[in-house]
Length: 618
Ligand SMILES: [Zn+2]
Ligand SMILES: [Zn+2]
Image (cartoon, rainbow, N blue to C red):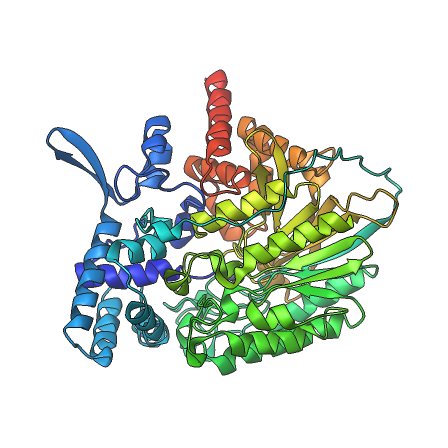
């Protein structure tokens, strides 16, 4: 997870147009209230949801935080002011460009506007704006983009929409979906695979215990964060709940624990984000250092176990900015990163062909006869990626490639696990990408037997539906970094093993964590088992239908949800103290049943069930 570039770019643009309101809630509460899924379905005008408004008042409040009612000719219009202000700002910017205002002057102006805004520091603005400005400039000067289109793309998560018909696209899908194959689960003593899932390590080599953990930046706990003014401000030894990266020794201790506790691992999945949250001071050198050091750390503890990595949004400098291959000049492209990933990953992945990683950071590998892992670059659907304004129609041909890989796997009788970084149902994912990814998952239900993501840093899941029934599930793993308010955690899956008629489904998973408060008090890191999915949630199995059932049971039973919430935040003490209020509860229920940003049917259904359960109680 990172700071939302769309919000920042949008905020700077908003600043140009006249200022944005400061956040009213604490960052943690904002995060819990964050509409991961609900926003701007079928807008009345620029982003507000007619349907959400009519169906659920509380949903509407989330959807249209910045919307205002306007009465024109006795009709009520709802206006998303954020979008309007963004469009005004883009008009100003484009006007300045056309008037010949120099690039340097505009960057300086943007830094000034940025620094004057709530929540953005001078350090941040002076570092970050010059990093992304060349991309904004390149897009404005190479593509005829309107203000509505630009804001619709970059601020889609705020409910802004584009009116550019080019933004609609679809992937060709091979053939009709074959009949759904019944799942016959194995006997309890059947062979299993044991798989470690690492995600969001965010190692900070500059982490300094005792330094200031309460600095105003997105990344503290460094010497540069200044002196801690009080004892409470001092950064903890094993990692800190505040805006701090992962100390190397904590990650090493975690890897040692995983290695020594699970001596029988078959392979490791690693779903990206190796660079810490110093978005204002990333560089090719810094990011490559993190890629190399984290790869070396993982290889050190798992020298003999295959590792299947994924590229995260933080690997790129500037953050999130992955261009469609061929769109960007060398100095702005991601080729330097792909080259290093290809070199590093060659040591992790058996029988690795680096050609697609060099193209755009994705690959497909047969890991056993009949069993394939496909790792893809989810930033080609990510709303914070400014390059998508230039090319949004299946950048890098990635989804077409994924579909083709699945068609070939189907023809060869293979089963597949998909690995990505950003889960497809969250609000930061573009609608077209989310929809097309879902179409592929629905079509290849018989082939795709697991999906694995990271990025949110929360321990969660997303159920996929075909309109009638659950057809797939994505596991979103907890992060190793505590950034922020979370405990470091890691996940182990038990997967249907090598036997005739194996389903390759996840049969159970276990999560281990480090309580940072206890580690700070004792000085020692004690990694403990937090829970197993089947035990904690009383699940018969972990099929998509079982996860849908869990969502519905949580909708009817708040105490069961409370168990989920504890795991969702990796039992992080600050989040446990904060608790999950009604808005947070409803949001989480929607999150777990929403894999397609364009389809909120399951969200409304689960909220309806929750409401009915409450009505019955009252
Ligand atoms: Zn991420
Ligand atoms: Zn992350």
